[in-house]
Amino acid sequence: MARMLVVDDSDYLAKATKQFLETNGHEVLALGKDGNEGVDFYKKYHPDLTLLDITMPNKDGRDCLSEILAYDENARVLVVSAVRDSDIIMECLETGAKGYVEKPLKFRDEEFCQNFRETIQSALED
Image 1 (cartoon, helix red, strand yellow):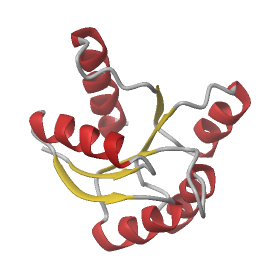
Image 2 (cartoon, helix red, strand yellow):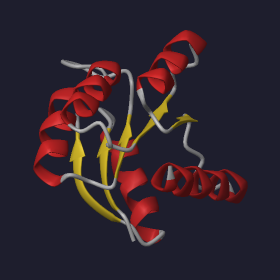
Image 3 (spheres, helix red, strand yellow):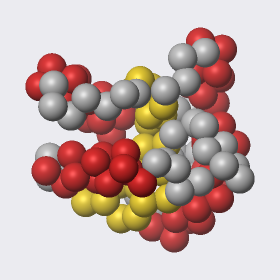
């Protein structure tokens, strides 16, 4: 079981992701609504993995990712976003994200769920 942080400005997606993670044996420590909360919650909880959206108000996921990694260079962050701009995705991966999962999250699709579980496991082991 891993301890996780979910940072997404969509309450619906954050709660659905939390339910998926908990159903798969993980503990969700907090749900952040923007990059500011993402950084604050990371510093407070030191999760094993942070699932981070890119497009959010106040502080976006790219800035949040950079701040988390500046605070803890060993942080494991998985980007979960609808952003399809390959330059932005590559920037996140080059900054230190452990992977990218494209929204929409299809929790009713078993193939998607299996791939998501594998991506999470890979991010935890990296």
